[in-house]
Image (cartoon, rainbow, N blue to C red; front, top):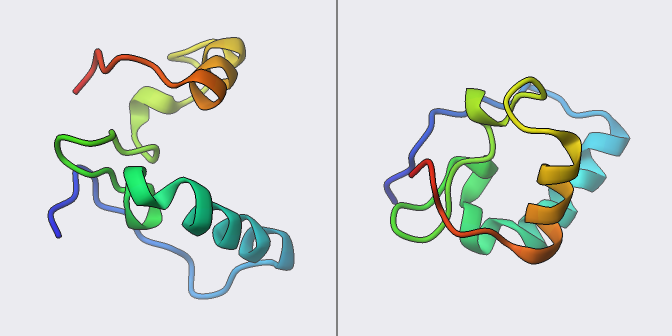
Length: 74
């Protein structure tokens, strides 16, 4: 499948990161794609410089995760 970002995972994940990956795959990946690389026409990548803490306030990220948002970057 086509993605919107290149994502490279580390060779090994900590126990906490592995748990987060499992949760992400069940809840977020159906829209945001494998490894958060995005799905064209569906949802943006979450691993992108636009989502660094300096670009959006923490509260905006929380609201987007809770409520969704209308696409404005993609």
